[in-house]
Structure formats: structure tokens, C-alpha cells
Image (cartoon, rainbow, N blue to C red; front, side):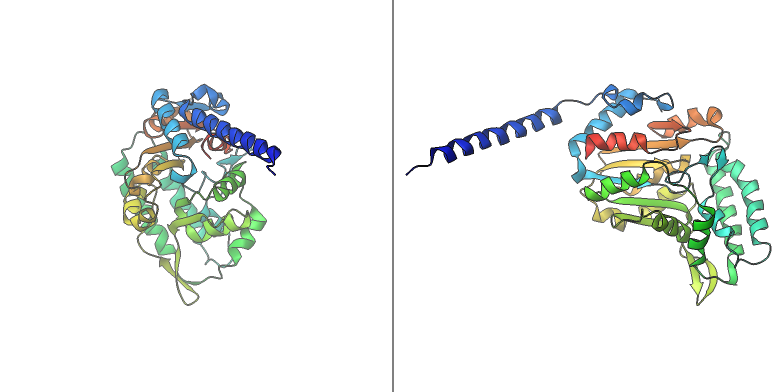
Length: 320
């Protein structure tokens, strides 16, 4: 005996699946406009070339999660730039709070920062000149990191005590990328040991997150400078190429969302082979009026004094 009810049910089920597939195809085929992404309409969002950004967003949407990867700076990119006007501590600054450090380290490290940080963010100094100063800064900083014993566990104690906040919505962003199996590269010119500790403390060091940074080199328990070549804010493009083994594994992921808070961060995707779309988002806070024009030359979207990941999460809602 023929079960006509089952035939009718399967017929309507196939019709429904076909309808949903057709709707998905139509949705993918329909171009996304900047006005469709409400978070991009906020006052602090600045876009230089809107047509180009719109085109890249559509490439990201069409490529979906399968072609996507994220590359992000850490200090003042994943972490906030300030909390109620008080600057947040960088990964090196967190390290300097450790009690095991030799006498005078903190003062000397702060002195180097006071001298070189204004050079790093000065829009009137060329990238080439800044790079020379950054090399000098890190070389002098590395000299301070020699000849004393250090228990790495104290970093977590300092983080718990002093606190350094991730941008609002960072965990939501990373969880969404983890669920969608999208790899995330945290590419930091800071201290990798601190970066890893902060990410762990905030439950943000997920399986899809990979960190490239300046890690301490140890001889037993004694600190002996950094491992490998120094990564500073203006040579990340060079290190991206050197670390091409990481990008080689991700050969099919030709779409990139890049996050940074310094001009040098804009080159972090240099190691991505045959990139189809690289959407660069810059977070700007210090000397915003002076530096906005320069940032718009290097980043597609510039967010002025935005301490959240709202824009990134808004884009991921369309892509994932």
C-alpha cells in the first residue's frame, strides 16, 4: 500500500529545501551596501574610499568563513587604548610591574618609552626614520632583559592584580571565529609571554588563536633577552613574510580582516599569498586629529576612540 502522506511530506520538504537554497543564493548575489551595516554609520567611523571598502566587504561576504582569516595586533588593539581616559598598560608595562625585576629596571624602561613613544606616533617623521628609532628602542630594552632570574607565573599574578581590559566584544568576536573555524593570528611587537598570559586570563586564547611576538629567552631560570629576531611596530611586514610557513598552511584563506592601532600594523598581511581582499581596520586614539589623515592612507576603516569590537562583530554578522 502506497503511503501518499509520506510522498506529500517529502515533496513539500524538498520544495522547502529548494526554496531556502534559492534564497541563500539570492542573498549572496545581492551586493551589501555600507548603509546595510548600521555600525558603520556611527560618528566615530571614518572611511576614506567608500566604494573600495564596499567592494572588499562584498568579497568577504561571498568568500564566507571558508576563505576568511583574521590578523590582529595586541597592545591597544585587542586591549583597550584607555579606560575613562586612563591609558591601559602595554604588555611590556605589565611585565615591568613584576617584583622579581632588578632594581632600576622599571625606571629605565619608562625612560626609554618616554623618549621613543612620541617618535613612534609622530605623523611628521617618515616610516624609515621611525624604524631606525624602533630598532634602537628594542635593542636597548633587550639589554635590560639579561642576567636575572624570573618566574613566569608572576605575570598572571600581576594581570589579576593590575588588570588590563580587552575591548568590549572581543570574546564574542573570538568565540564566533572559533565556532566558524576561522584562524586568528595575533601579531604583536609587545612581549609575547605577557600577551599569552593576558589572553589566557580573559579566556581568549582559543584553539584557533596563534601568537607571533617577542618571547623571553631563558637560560635555565635566567632571562637572556628575546628569542629570535626582534619584532617592532614597523617591521611586521618583514616578519609576516619570514613567518610565511604559517600563511602557507592557510593558502586557501585569501580574505583577511586586519586590526591594528599603529601605521606599521597595516603591513601585517604581507605574508598572505594571493590575497583576494584585505580589509584593514585601524583603532586611533592618541593625537587623533593630527593622525587621522595618515591613518586613512593606510587603513580602510579608521575608528576614533572606539574601545569596542562592535564594528568587527557587525561585519562578521554578514560574513560568517
